[in-house]
Amino acid sequence: MSALSFLVLLVAGVGWGYLKLTGNIDTFSADGISGDRPPGTAGGQNVLVIGSDTRSGDNSGLGGSTGAVGRSDTVFLLHVYADRKHAVAVSVPRDAMVDIPACRKPDGTWTDPRRHSQFNGAFSVGETAEGNPACTQNTVEHLTGLRVDHTVVIDFAGFSALTSAVGGVRVCLPQDVYQRDLNPKLATRGSRVFAKGEQTVSGQRALDYVRLRHGIGDGSDIGRIKRQQAFVGSLVKKIKSRGMNPTTLLPLADAATDAMTVDPGLGSADKLLSFALSMKNVDLHNTKFVTVPWRYEGARVAVVEPDADELWAALKADRTLDGKETKGGRAGSGASPEASQPPVSGMGIDVAVYNGTTVTGLAARAAGLLSAHDFGVTGRATAQDQNRSRTVVAYGPGLRDEARTTARLFPGALIEQSTDAGIQLIVGQDYADAPSPAPDASSPSAASGVPADVADGARSADDDPCEDLSYG
Image (tube, rainbow, N blue to C red; front, side):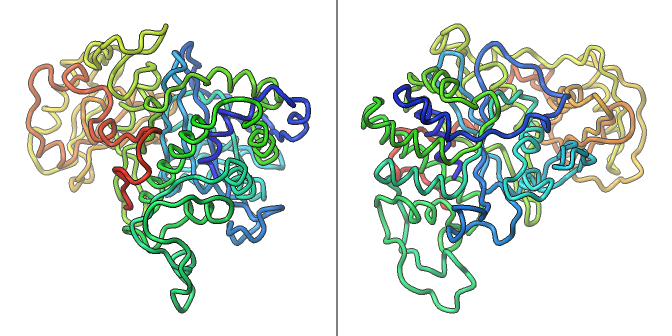
């Protein structure tokens, strides 16, 4: 589903036949996009790609959701760098627990913000078959602090048509897969659907591959995300090898525009053409795929802070995963993350500090760290709950960015919105167990700009489909 939207962005703007394509393009209303948005940047662009599993229309019978409400099956944020030679797609697990801001329903009313809700619930706000891409966009902007320049939605029918139009995609499987792996409710394993090893899939088989969870690895959505990332890389590699010309791309463009819904900014063939041409020089090796830093939280997934914020900060600065600057065509300059990211400065930020453990002196220790970085400490006290295992930075209305700055001094801290005014730091046992930092070790200038496990785990579009592939 959303995997093919990456291809859509590369090929949907073919000039030849663009008048015909314009008639195929559906757009969603911008009325639901929040007025409280992050500022835009002068460098790269951010494109939100959503795969919808609705069963309405042509999707009937393709294995979508069982109800009439559209849901987001897969989502990633594609950052295209200013030099138009690098790109990174960041997957957000559908089970991730996030804050969903106020969103517009079909009747024009707005919902109340929801805290700690499952990420894919944003697309279902309003309970319509076509889903609510504006709400998902609002949620991603709230989560990342990045302005989304464009949003693209593609459904199952579109995914199936596109994989057929491209002539199939090479994938890899670690073992045979049977019908019960696709539908665990079956009494027997049924016939074999996929054989072990490399193979080419298209249409329904491609859809089955990217949606497959059971029978491979731990059956998690995380493992499936890794397969989807490999699928996109394999797909883009094939398109590049066939040549980017009207003869090969027009059938793909026709299928793409007939199968997707876009924001008004991409709502015509000439707009798609302009955007697609801006990415024609993106290199395969420099097209990366990662997943937002995460950990399991029971049956759900938690976004790990401040690791995730470090990733968003790198994209906001248009810095690649290995720390190189690309603004103004400076990619490859060798600038290190240490040199490109300033130390933490709390000037103008006031924080109340609470000890959420029974370890004495912990609030004073945290307050001293804050003061050393020019934060204003408004008070120190013992928290009502002294059994905190994790450090929390709670922030009141309008103080999200200040809370993120605060959390940079406390690796692993959770960032939570609160109805109380100001910023409260409640230190937990994780802070008590951590060694006291060296004088300057708490600033990003003493660490990499992007968490090492994120950068090291990135996949490139030119990777072998069987190489370095996690199945959960």
